[in-house]
Image 1 (spheres, rainbow, N blue to C red):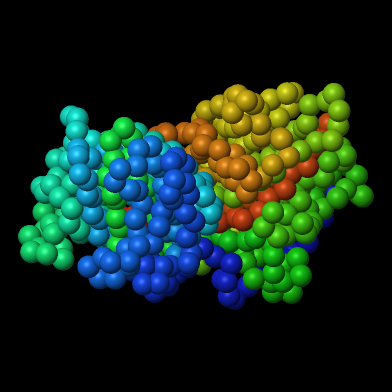
Image 2: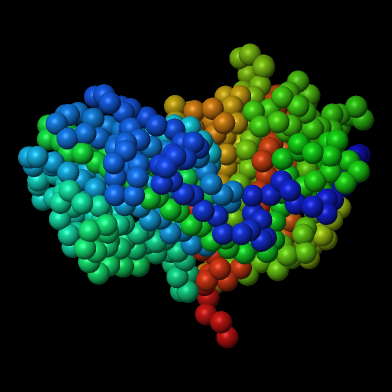
Amino acid sequence: MRRQIVFGIATAMALTVFATSRSQAVLIDTFDPPNPAVTALQNGTAPGATVTAGGPTGNFLRLVNDGVNGQANAYIYDVADAGPARRVVAEFDARATSVAAAADGFGVAFLPTGQYGTSGGAPFPTAEEPNIPDTFAVGIDLHPAATENHISLHRNGVFANANAAPVDLDAGVFHRFRVEVDRGTDGTSTASVIVTPDIFGTPGAPVTVHNSVPFSLLPQETRLAIYARTGGLNFSGDIDNLNVNSTPFTVTGRTVQDFDLGNNGEGGGQGTGYHAEARADDENADLPVVMSGGPTGNFLRLMHDGRNNLRNAAVFDASGETTDPTNVVYGHFDFRLASATQGQSPADGFSVALIPTATFGETGPGWDHTATVAEEPNIPGTFAVAFDLWQNLNNVSTHWDGSQIQETAIDTSILDLDNGLFHRAQLVLEQGDGGSSLSLSIIPDVHGTPGAAVVLADDLFIPGLDLYSYRVQFSGRTGGAHMTVDLDNIRFATIPEPATFGLLGLGGLTLLARRRRRAAA
């Protein structure tokens, strides 16, 4: 027995963060007056960051103060543009002034909003060594030691490299810093840092300190954070004339649904159309249903706690472009698992699969998990990720072409899959020679207090997985035991040529050591 409800396809894509055409976005702060979309944090000796008069172009931001030890201040901007970008250029003027030897320095970080939110506070690293999980950052080091007067690059909480600055960073004049992050034509992401000395005095020629350094940068939107600190030594640290430009990249295929518009999706609600299906031993089995009251609005209840032997699915339609993926598939979704049953392990699990349109068509029902276990989705010609909780499991597995590729048992002290909180799963599949590479991670408690991303696959090569025409299917089941499965904020995108893939956010999965796309004929 199978029942299904067909939900409408929207003509508008207002929900999507993967806009197919976005104008260039700009974040500007000259402090005349200051940009209000910011959070100032103090994590040491007072005072905090202060907008100050008397700079060469008006007001400026004083982050730390000469003569005051133990300061640690941050200035963290709200997100200025939704979605990832092909190229980001951040320019700002920075001045360090001290009577004695200066310490410690500045940091500039591009915080992924999937990990750290679109506004408000964020991690507080050592300013001149901004090692923040899932983040690309630049450090400006003034401390009189081996790294004095150096500019360093940092990725995913790890120092990458440092080069000596071409000017005296503690000269008491404003230097202009330019940080460029973009996607190279060979499919790698790169970062450059350029310094123009004494920008308001006698400007020198711009000098490239880091030139197109390759990094693994991923599809996430970001926001800017600026840090400074003093220690046993100190300095006055000033920032002015901040300007951040982000240029969009083209996303050709997308599956987008957050269940917030269109009366539960019926009758043409915005977002990708989908089929809500129930396969069960009981005619009264509960279908998937859109519910209110989630942390970001409505959500889809795929599976219902207290109901045995459910076999439910939400099968999304293909868009015209997802039928022709060429280089990269990116996806994320939020999920919440819970069970009120005391003394019994929740059961059984759920999965997300990229079902091939050649087999299942571009709309309508998907693969029949009456015959195939939802948490073991070994489907011919199909890639899938599964979440398994029975018995007392806390496992995530990946599957391709009818076989399990790998399974990871997650320590519940790090991430408890069924703790009743929304977590965000993120994946990237990139075409390579003879297969595709997978990066997969989960951000715990994504709408509460997000934890560090739990990495489940780091550039895992899957032979024979050539990207194919697909659509997205979520499937779940219960047995003698049961649990709730909730889904929200579903985003899948097909991203075309490497040259247009772009920066893609500087964080999120924090994983991908990019493989070159297979050579064109």
